[in-house]
Length: 128
Image (cartoon, rainbow, N blue to C red; front, top):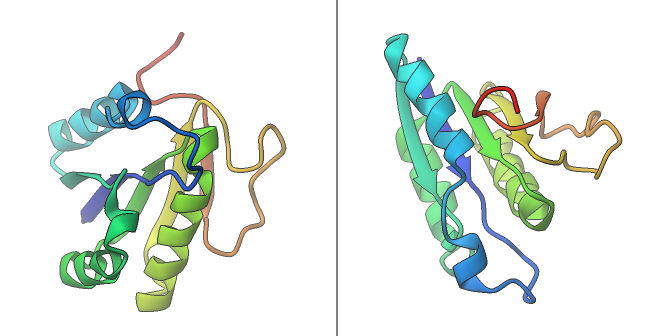
């Protein structure tokens, strides 16, 4: 099973690059647990991929993931939704989920968004 864990881009221009360019540790924690359990996992830092949007389709088409997980913060939720839409257009089969300190809709359940199959509330680096 091919799993992509993606740190999506931020659309909001007010964000400073130095504040957002570090991939959250929770994404690495989730990736490490999956690798320990023999899953084919890749972490993609896409916080700047919106500068070359054609790469999103290119990479997703090439990697053909079975599952895509996103590390979602308030400022990158629309980037995650945009990437999820692209993934579902290319192949409606992959299961898409998000995790992060906030869900897509700031406190209310993010589902039903047709692009997202599941939401994991909280961060992936264990109990706080």
